[in-house]
Image 1 (cartoon, rainbow over the protein chains, first blue to last red):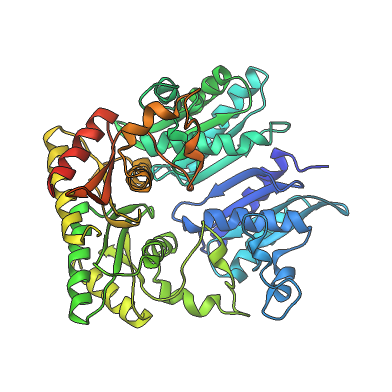
Image 2 (image 1 turned 45 degrees about the horizontal axis):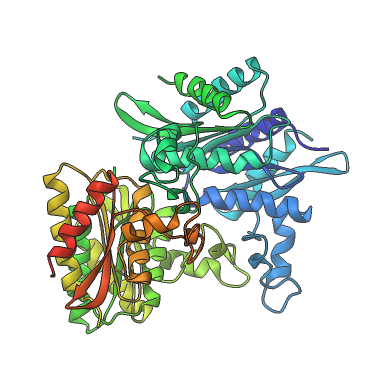
Length: 132
Length: 132
Length: 132
Length: 132
């Protein structure tokens, strides 16, 4: 089962709302369970460089069915997945990408970039909340 | 001057509406004047392979400030721009990407992919019309 | 608002002058606010490998509207943006890339590579000074 | 022997002058005999998409020590070099890239993009003339 465009739009609307509440400008990407882009929004003034990061956070989360923050400790020097970022045309393994679920099933992922990783994560969670 | 997210969302809404009217499922991308993604929507059931084509059509139109259909005759074998598609990480030079203007100024572009190129072009034009 | 070619040429001239004063040979790149190359100069004898680094430093600064030296501490192992370099086709996150401003607005960025990062930074700053 | 930065700047100045005379806005790239960028200029308002094309024209001419217009007939369907553009990270094989010589020796190449290929070629030739 895959996320619908309508659900993806709800995720983006909720993420945009949360981003505005904390005075940030975000790039927000929603992908389906196959890591293919479903919807995207760049808020006015958000970093151009965050377009690709938001996309890669969402895809990374979808590819491994886990939040990018769960990967962060595993990719450090000496850790098991050190340099996994070289796969799949580039991963992003810091917070801001989380899976979207229907019940227990992963139906997609959202990636957020444009502020601190804490804020990125907060906004991603607000997006995910919209379809929970 | 660059397109705003609000304008980009209007373009996508109008393109989606037109796509539904002609019973097609489209990937729709809006980029700014610098060819950076502002908004994207993949309609339910639209080709996954068209995600990248919609993005590349929009970027191609923004990069050269002309519709991708204007490039089509020029890129044929024996014609002046044969194989220009190898530039910029990949261009798409068939119809479906058109510039978005504010008066005479190009403020972005929309790219549509998911059906025949005639339908793609029709839907792109409907999108552009929304902010004219 | 975007940097003009004339401004970019002033940045490069000033950077070249500073580089010569400290007996270094630099690659110098100026990009616009959208991270697209406006002007470039490789001083005679400067490292060929620094062509791409100068370009990537300038683009990184423009993409995130901050100096590459501001990113350096954040991308270390265990830090929030660890391995952000895998985005956008490759970032450079050590010193030598800084934004160019008109008042408060970022209008472009300059990237310098060819010596120690301290020297690179010095030369980039001399370049930026030229249009301040 | 390789082109110097000073020579490359003369090439670009002459190309800019010719481009202005024929009312065009060009992206102009000079590479050395090793196909590495030496100097670049994007005239105000020139296509962003032509940045990469100017670079690739110059590199293509340097890689094969011949003008890109000499490759054009050879890359057509059924011809010996059909699809050579897939090599070297992307070639451009239509007019606008020409070698720069010192006597009989190739010391670099210039690539021009931003108008019709005829104009591109004209401006490239004016650039090359500057150091002949």
